[in-house]
Image 1 (cartoon, protein in one colour):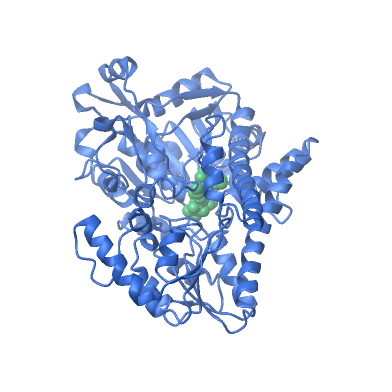
Image 2: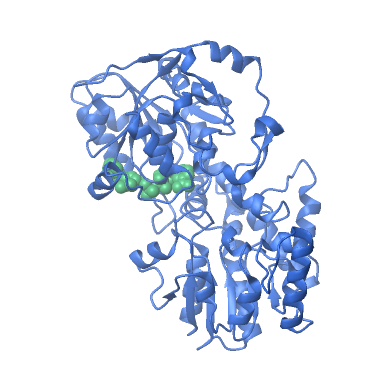
Length: 562
Ligand SMILES: NC(=O)c1ccc[n+]([C@@H]2O[C@H](COP(=O)([O-])OP(=O)(O)OC[C@H]3O[C@@H](n4cnc5c(N)ncnc54)[C@H](O)[C@@H]3O)[C@@H](O)[C@H]2O)c1
């Protein structure tokens, strides 16, 4: 039976949350949070500021990276006025229940909408119906559980069921790259045809997948062509800016919501969908909205490649990239975020979106060669890292190398286009014996056979047993908090290549490591390990008021402060 398309909730059900959203108080988790704020101390309401991700808190503010940032929050009169209004619950369908679709669906349900998540992967739908979340994203499992129990979130394999019972249909299917860098739009086209074949009355069809400019026009054209009954509909572009690892927080409190629409009717509906999030809404035409997403990701990649190019100059001149980045980033016109030297960008978005933007710009006759340089620097950064490893170890063949990290960034299980995976494969190709460990990525790498020949360890400490070198490839907080003295004891030769500048160079030197960060001078051990380990432990005890034993647990930065 079709659902009624509107459900009014009384204002007494509403609560203004730390995420700036209006939600029903009964929907919050036991800790009144969305999963990844709990490690960050007091709520931003009491502090006036917030920190979304745990990683930054664990690592300290100088442990930069392309990560979640603190933001100011100032509830105003507009919020109070909105609180007096009734929340209108919308009926929403989301086609594609992956990293974007599932998190978006859960967050829409969390603010009171009724959401059907659709996927054509039967196993995924079955698992979701059984309460199994197929991806790792902090806070997502509780969010899904809570909203499924409250009957606001359900799963199906049928696009018809979703289209029949929803006012708004979001498309969140993959847009993978083709060999030439252009976007494979077959998933989007197929979904457009499927929607057309079951469309019986007016619906808003929203493209949330990242697509080339002018895709909205093509989606509208396809639906018109395949819909036999000439139903009215509108196509809207609503690009998604979430970051895996803090996707729930990003969706609940977006910096901005971009809505590209040429229809007042569709726009009014979209505003109702996003009203509970109380975020700035930017309305544009469809083409501009589509372009915003590719231009934003390309700009962020440009910042990463820029600082990585500077890190090469730092290495060659003996300067320290962390100090240089702090000096540059203190300029408000530039900002410190995304100025984090490392192994370069990877993942399912940046590499493909930059390639797509290059291809789109060429197709429309306005080539963008700057972005080719961004790609080149990104690849060179990784090659330079492996070369430095080779130059230091002389021969990589038969060397026992431990690699910490396989995912493309921390706090996710996503290993798509991961630089860490590429590094493992580079080392294996050179004949090294690689043992890798990742807190969430081991299974995915095994399942997809991404690193043939790698040995996957059950823990970070197991991975370093008898290793001649440790490579840190993904900056998981777990690695920052590890017992480094024990790592030192387990390694055959305590050499560490830190591809993400996670550790403090002085501490690594004091612990007896030969330490190679990115864009910073290497440090050589200057005292015997046994002596400095216990010395560090007693310093830890003095500062933290707890016995250190003969270990150096605690985050690298905590120790570094001593
Ligand atoms: N992952 C991110 O961080 C991120 C961030 C912003 C935007 N995006 C964009 O969002 C889109 C989706 O990315 P993702 O990471 O969620 O992908 P994903 O691969 O994790 O999920 C896509 C889902 O769509 C399903 N699907 C494919 N064809 C379908 C069909 N015909 N009917 C129903 N379901 C279908 C797949 O089974 C899969 O579960 C891409 O365009 C991506 O560029 C991704």
